Image (cartoon, rainbow, N blue to C red; front, top):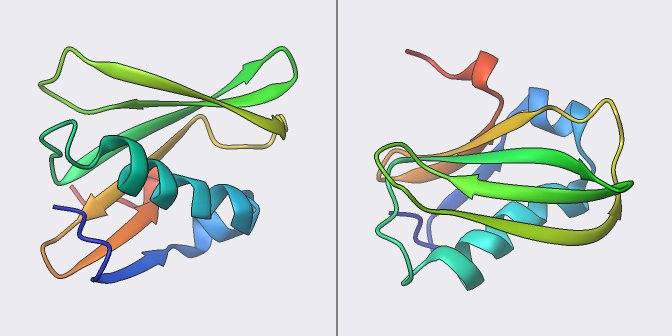
Length: 103
């Protein structure tokens, strides 16, 4: 899951709510901090939280007791979504909002 050599995308909902630098940060977190450390599922959860005015991203996934918080030196904005998902269908990977996920 989440092979950096496969196509990577972000949905319109994500692009319209987050700057490109933050979208890129999700891929960096996956590639440099999660890959090889955790057995990654098809769906990864990233909560965006206000940490004293700066953005923190909290990684988690279902059926795992682990979570990791990444503190960024990026201002937090109130209009950021609370939750962003990363989905790997085996061919490509997408950053999307929960409202854009098909159930």
